Image 1: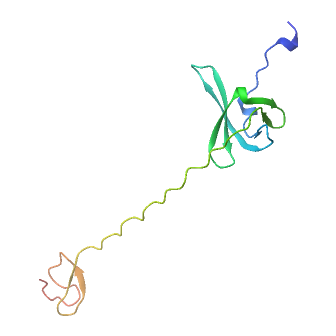
Image 2: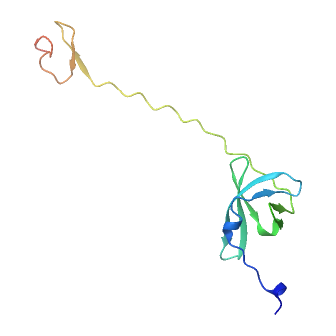
Image 3: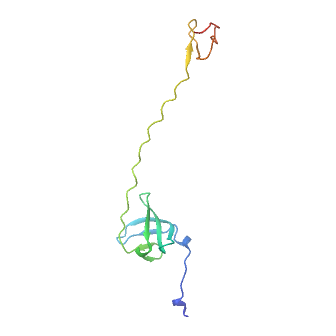
Length: 122
């Protein structure tokens, strides 16, 4: 069996970090991982697109791999999901208090006497 007819296996780590360029010459993004569909025996590149969204590129769309990965089709990169503003947390309610009728000192609601002047509270 000649060397040219032998299968050549390439570790998936080789692809991680490589730039992916589509057929129009546009930068798609950088390879994050290689995905394998066990049941279908398909392989895809998982690419972190320049918009921040992950894109799956089927292996059949890969034309060449050298210094970069060149695709044989243009890639439509989805826009990132819009940020949904979170409502502010509700204000924390102050614990109930009782005001001394004599000196106007604010005491906890459960106090029976004023902590400042000793006056009996309501």
